[in-house]
Amino acid sequence: MKKYIVFAVSFLIIYSLLQLISGMILTLWYTPYIANVRSLGVNSPQEIHLFQPIIIAFLSATIAYFIPAKLK
Image 1 (spheres, rainbow, N blue to C red):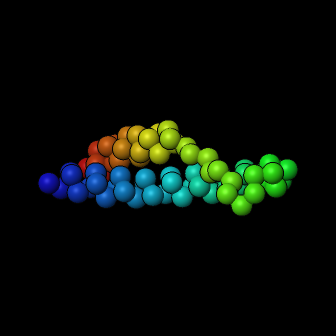
Image 2 (image 1 turned 60 degrees about the vertical axis):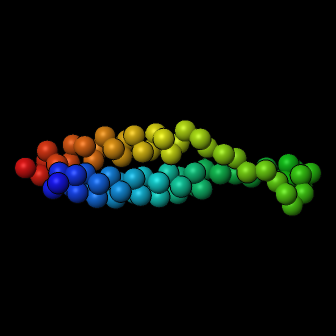
């Protein structure tokens, strides 16, 4: 039970940190193209990133898997 709690807590912390960092990087690199925004009007479509959360979750789970071994 202790291993599961350590894994779950470390996974949630790492997942949250990676989501925060990736959001900051995406915001930093985003440059809007004004001509497209004007032609589309107010209801401009949003981009959807489907695989980014899956990659971050896999990376978080991999890191969280090795944390209990380091705590022994």
